[in-house]
Structures are given as C-alpha cells and as structure tokens.
Amino acid sequence: QLQLAESGGTLAQSGGSLRLSCAASGFTLDYYAIGWFRQVPGKEREFVAAISWSGGSTYYADSVKGRFTISRDNAKNTVYLQMNSLKPEDTAVYYCAARRDYYSDYDLSYEYDYWGQGTQVTVSS
Image (cartoon, rainbow, N blue to C red; front, side, top):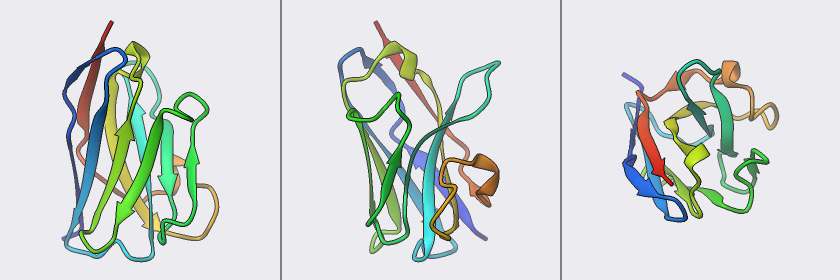
C-alpha cells in the first residue's frame, strides 16, 4: 500500500525554523516528483514547493521563496521541507504529495496521486 507520512509540524515562533519530513512506504520515491502544499481552514490548498524526481529541479511559491528549501534523499525514501524565517502567515496544515514526474505542472495539486495525512504548523507572532 502506497503511503506518505508527514512529520515535524509543531508550534514555532515567528522568525524561527522547522524541518518537515515526508516519508514514503509501500513504494520507492524514485521517478516521483514530490510537492508540498498547505491549507488553512476556509481556504483552498496552496502550493508551497516541489522537487523533481532526481532533485535536480526545485520550485517554490513566491510567498516562501528564499525562506523554504525542499530537498530529497531517495536512499531514505524521504523528502524534506526546511522552513526558515517563519511568519504567522505560514500557519497551516502542510501536506506532501507524490506523482510520476513528467517535468511540468508541479504546482497543480490535482496532478498528484498520493497524499499524506498532513502535519500542523503553527507560527506564533
């Protein structure tokens, strides 16, 4: 059974850092692009960052560019989201998602086939 599991979400202070992890089980992440999305109640899920299967290409939403870094360790079957300089507006449930990599549309949530259950990130001011 293909599963993704996020971890690392917690309460952080404004200006602080967190690292989220997305671990895959039941399949290997080789050849899968991974995206991070976030959602707050009453709003649509929004794209945060994505990484190609090889890790050679990364993509970011303008709101997190320069503050967040996505990376992957295919040997560990895990993708990471390093979040620095956190802001209260980063507060959300963060989800990771996977799909076969076809080198485009990384920011489209409906293109992803597998989703984790989400991890809550709360940033206090």
